Length: 315
Image 1 (cartoon, rainbow, N blue to C red):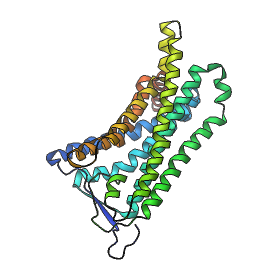
Image 2 (cartoon, rainbow, N blue to C red):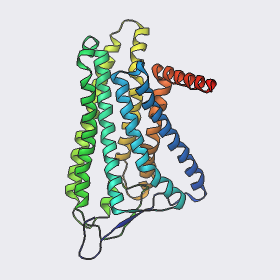
Image 3 (spheres, rainbow, N blue to C red):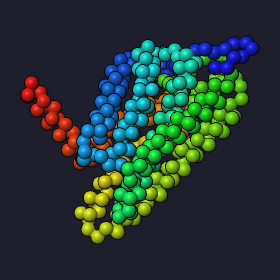
């Protein structure tokens, strides 16, 4: 952090969960299992999309990038969370705190953008199927994905640069399990209004405006589905976007609940619990939802398992 005439904070102390008592070991083991399943499940989806020709379409291309983003989220926050739960505290350098804040903000922005792009893809496929192939051609998915990652990393970089300019004179205790922006700003002994304005702009551009876009696309999608004459046709069409709708509902539901909940006083523990749900559980839900609700993914998994079994038998 920037130097001060009196004291410079070079290290922060994460003190996320102080009232676990005898539950810290079971929770630690549970989170290790969740993290392992999260990384394995998302890597599985990335692998399936890469090797299976039936999954070579824009929807699954976007899904593989969503899985990569989920791995980034869980791997960025997970190790510190596990240490906080196991030992009750986790020291982190000022630079390490900024790096974690950067990747957390970037991954949150990237996920919002990817969910928006995926909703646009489903809108074209259902509401404008005759022109889908010409609009969603080979180049457009690549451009959209590049935009998602650039927007996420770019806007988060601006935030971190502004935080870097702040002075931190002590104390250095963050009552959270990772370097989240709000508790970090509370420790600053300089004016944080510029950072708060920039973050508010980010929330409007990346969060609220894109949520409205997703809602608008699904209103159009539902109108198109309702115009289908047969119930079988309606169910078949809805099944193509139901997994994405479930992921959007979970992600934005936890995000809205998290930032609507006050972060001070008695609700601080609730805020940390919601943050845990958003950073640890949501990346786990995505591969599970797409595996259970998506027929193509299930078939690809079965084919992969059959191929692995045949390779073992040949040996």
